[in-house]
Image (cartoon, rainbow, N blue to C red):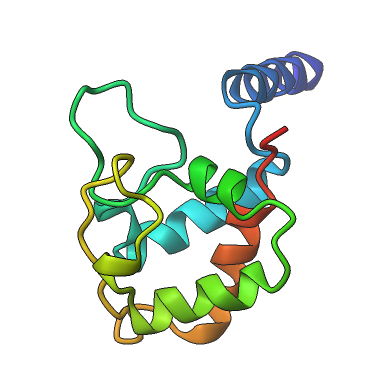
Length: 127
């Protein structure tokens, strides 16, 4: 009976991993998604680009990972954007997101957690 349970659990995990190849470590992904949701990040952002015709409020994290792939100090820069907000006039997301400024989020997430979340976003496979 236990062998059957393990087989079912392994199959479910394979399906979950196969349906979202973007994320490497499901346990870390679940904890990061929980952190993002509890910090309010998922109100404006998603992992993957939307298939809807309307533009998202904030860019999808997969696009953020692609945009900052290989950029020196990307993590530091993005953590500061999370904590202090952004200027809509300096946005390089024009045409890809709603163009609203990212509000400062220091009241919703601490810098250590923002660092973890940004690190997770930047670790997404964008090749």
